[in-house]
Amino acid sequence: MNVIGFGGVFWRSSNIIELKKWYKEVLGIPLDNEWNGTIFPSKEGNDTIFSLFKEDSDYFPTEQQVMLNFQVEDMNECLKHLQKQGIPLLKEPEKSEFGTFTWIADPEGRRIELWEK
Image 1 (tube, rainbow, N blue to C red):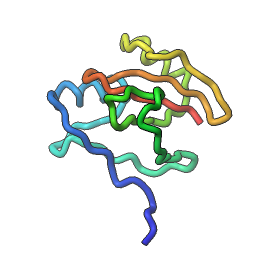
Image 2 (cartoon, one colour):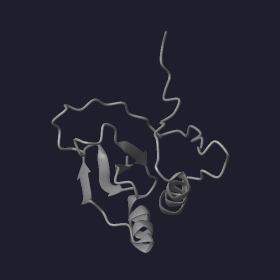
Image 3 (cartoon, rainbow, N blue to C red):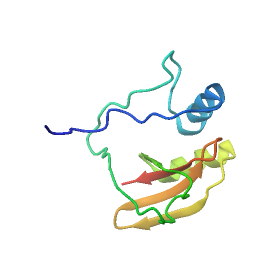
Image 4 (cartoon, helix red, strand yellow):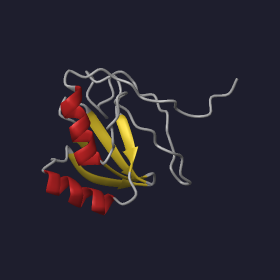
């Protein structure tokens, strides 16, 4: 048996309607269907990473068991959009050999990492 990728990310929400609206307006993720989800078609250069962190890692809040990382095409455009939306950055963009990263939070307080490869 070989795993070929992620089939999805699923979580509970206390307010699905508001969260769907936020993800569409802020991150451009359309969730306008009865099953409250979207499909990201594969694109060349779009990588999905599965990574484990130690329990005491401070990379994301310890009370948050999972953190989403969305790959973006253009971090500068993304930052302009977030500013227009009034979405504060949890950390200024950080460049490394892996790309550029920044962090925001959704309305339910989950930290989300944005990554330009």
